[in-house]
Amino acid sequence: MTSRALDQFLNENIAELKEHGLYNEIDPVQGANGPKITVEGRELINLSSNNYLGLATDDRLKKVAKEAVESHGVGSGAVRTINGTLDLHIELEEKLAAFKGTEAVISYQSGFNCNMAAISAVMDKNDAILSDELNHASIIDGCRLSKAKIIRVNHSDMNDLRQKAKEAVESGMYNKIMVITDGVFSMDGDIAKLPEIVEIAEEFDLITYVDDAHGSGVLGKGAGTVKHFGLQDKVDFQMGTLSKAIGVIGGYVAGKENLIDWLKVRSRPFLFSTAVSPADAKASTRAVELLMESTALNEKLWKNGNYLKEGLKHIGFDIGKSETPITPCIIGDENQSQKFSKRLYEEGVYAKAIVFPTVPKGTGRVRNMPTAAHTEKMLDEAIAVYEKVGKEMGLI
Ligand SMILES: *Cc1c(COP(=O)(O)O)cnc(C)c1O
Image (cartoon, rainbow, N blue to C red):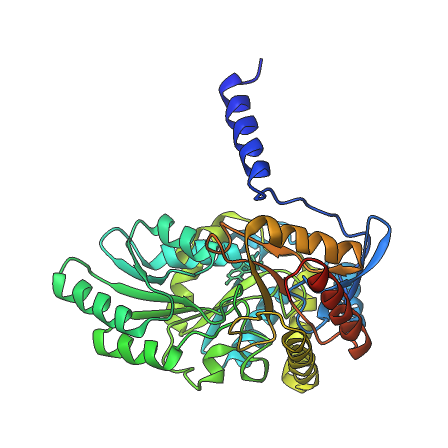
């Protein structure tokens, strides 16, 4: 017999989530995740993927991925430190280092994995981490895993950061202190105040860690938030993902040689989990090359982002304070947010509701992620649907 205690726990908690509109239904996409997707047999305008540059379905990437399957097979065969490090992984890391302008790069199987790996490889119970309250779940979990003291900092509040850094240093309790932040905050689309963060870090000798999952491919002509501010020499860890703008799967840390060397011998997902497949490595390398060769996709992303924002603002939606193509439509109430998303879906727009615990209670929203692959016609159609459903529900 299986556990009755487990059944009780699961049934009670799932029922409670459903009652509060917090239970997330998963809709499988039938086919590719492009600017239009098919769900339940219906074609919808897709405003929910992180495929910022449209690279997930790019023919140039598909071509090299197929070639890599032919030359290297479908799996890498081992963890990186045994014999799973293929020439394709080295090529990817060298290309990423050139792209980021750092001495070296280490790649991982995902961005999530990367944060679990890198934070706990350098921080321990005698250390402290100053962490923005809106940091991504993988940062929070990475910090917890390290056993360092986690000091929550009010979102992008530089006075609070300075004060808490000062207290931590003056307490004399910690060997090392890190400040960690998202480069771009994905729920609101605002950018971390990196110049000030770096200044405070220099004043108190803090280790700096920027998770640039939503900045890479988007800011700094594609090279990310750190490049956007020209701070390449002043940030210790530039973490990024290959799963969003790059369109494939994987994560990486860019930094100085000694840091990357250490992560290669001490970060556990690198040591104990199999490396990404040849096709993934090759497609990611090609994507980075494309970004280094041309900024056309990046420019198209920004053009589409601005177009969608203007359109939604014009018809009366609260689109928050985004500084990037990420375009939230803030509704507030969790159930209303879910209902709004459902109605958009029925009318042909796929834009997912995002509610607590992903965002704070009472700030439910539908988040739109325009990409370089959308056409103006698709965006016009989406805006028209927003107007119709927004009026129907009394939101505008
Ligand atoms: C998506 C995301 C990650 C995780 O990246 P994956 O490659 O999807 O695992 C990490 N950090 C932030 C800020 C993210 O948005």
